[in-house]
Image (cartoon, rainbow over all chains, first blue to last red; front, side):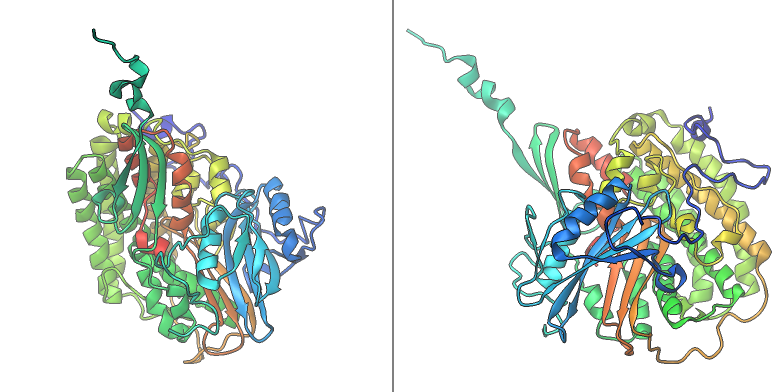
Length: 171
Length: 379
């Protein structure tokens, strides 16, 4: 009984050492100028070898859910969400990382919000996986994601009122 | 005169509408660490399973912002302690990318060999522990027996059995010796028949198949929405692998397949990992054949690194999926921001949706098939 191969509609495991055929949907890693130029988002192509992502866009805080919707319709998957505290500029940056499961593309969406009132719409209605990333970002930076179902502490203690990755935090 | 209550208002009649909360963990063997799952149950069926994380949170990202890159390097072995090599690769990769350090080819090949050995040892722990969850004790002993060979090999060159910290910015801590190279070849020759034996012993076992086939289906769309990667997304038929999608190190020079199974059930995720071990053996064998001579450290890597201002990412395919390090530098010796994107967090986040309506025992099979390492979630 051949258990492994009977389930595989496209058996790739060959013992003859023949070169592997590219797996279905395997991405071609060659650089492209801007494959998302048709989207109404300010995506700029960046050098992947220098930065580790292909595209980046700085959007208004109100646009992050719209941007997530466009990337969702393009088949992107949510990689992670995080913040950066720019204390000197009095701003918080929210960084949304996306990867494409079949096209090998990485794109980054950024938005800056005022540090004294860090609020930004949630994208968890577009990507349910954003729920935990946003809770974590709220834990660490105190950024409030408007419309998020539950911003209770995720990794920090349940009664935590501090935000340890703020640059003015000291233990 | 006895007036009987209508059946719907009696205790027995109202029972099906009652739910109760079952607390799983944080100290439960099936959660493989300090994970807690708050389960709302309707009898044997899961109504809602809400993972509660953070019990071993160590603020790894803050530690990244108060020490130099070299001082932070040992931390990377302690995030996912079962695939420490891959995690160290993530940090050295991002620093080398930002500082534009060229790594000698010999070091890259040795990185691939040790990373793939580490992937096999990690999958062996998963295999043994997963089957333990399902009620089979014996496979764990086989798995740990074979894993011991890998740990001995890696201990010989790194001095550590789990937390290797073997890669350095620009290369490796030290070169490999003949003992390691011969041992690695011996391991490849030893492991291939063992994988066949695993298949005969466990994979074809009818009890295992009945526990896994059709259980806990996860669609490719659900993986995409939650950002699940690694064997989870490949078990849903998407052959996404960072080694192909964003090629790094010398993986493009090596010939290997990305196993993917379209079924999306626990069996598919099981088979992906079993096939991956065979593929890792193939990679190790090729890398040993192609291993060039030369130095294992780039020349003139400064002792204290300052990365040019900017933000940099580097992703690797760890044993559990996509691991990415993002460094935001302001041209100082210490990172301004260091973000760790870990695969287990995203893989676990779909559990609440995926486990709805499942039997408790099947939900635990699903949880085991996600292959969680809790410090990887909590960081």
